[in-house]
Image 1 (cartoon, rainbow, N blue to C red):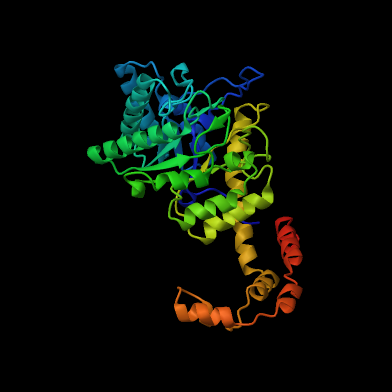
Image 2 (cartoon, rainbow, N blue to C red):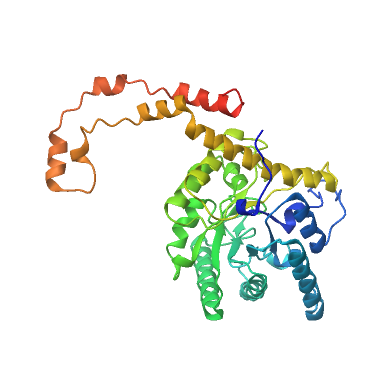
Length: 388
């Protein structure tokens, strides 16, 4: 059996809010006592994680005084130094406090929008102080229940103004920091603006500093909308915008479940891991998920170990897929190129277009070809089931 022990080079990270989730849901009270940030760092070191990420108020309570803030941060830094855990990413909580009930950057109240910028600048300072190189933005309240309440074009403009402002702030401070925008279609708002990774990619190109901004796609958020997450990640990778990624799992069409990675859709998880590994993704593999409400903290450790172990197993499966003679023979046949279309490839030229228009294709032959996708998919299933 292969060694599926996580190592620093795998860059497996968890948020304080993930392993620190206390099991509260809309219908039930907490089932686990809260642990301090220091205790959560120690837990992550015990299970073999590489890094820890946080919202500002996961670490420093929103109403902490400056001396309290400094003491908390000092203790956290010591825990990081003692365990070797690093902080690759940070973010701001712009959704929990009642102040943000109508959004943060898109709120109708200009005082709320200004406070959101202030809170984010302070949180960026904290992230930079602790070594984060990626800063994630999830607009959990940036939406509406009724379109009578907000003009969506105005909301887009407010979002752009905020991101441009914060990019300039990072440049002015000299921080080595990039932004990653995280999409979600709904929940907790009825509808959230920039609801998919594709929306975010289009929005980024309208910013003053698009080179500083990428995406942080999440499995559950795309699956909630019934989308193919692998395709969304591929689009982000192809455009050079996959700055960070949130790994978890989710039944299609359900509420945001944040299950352990690979828990529901193993084939989708396999092709995601294969996509990342085959294309040399070098960023963090962040597990934005949490343990079942049935678990104590030993179960939380099982959850964290399970996320990393499943990723490594699927990584090995991807290597086997790439080395499997029958699979590779099928792929070579499927993608065979006899060179007869070489003259039509590449950039447009008038002569090329004229020659292509004049060419005769045998539609009957093209339509009659069997593609052997059934066999290919079955071999993939057998590989995942461990019989190849």
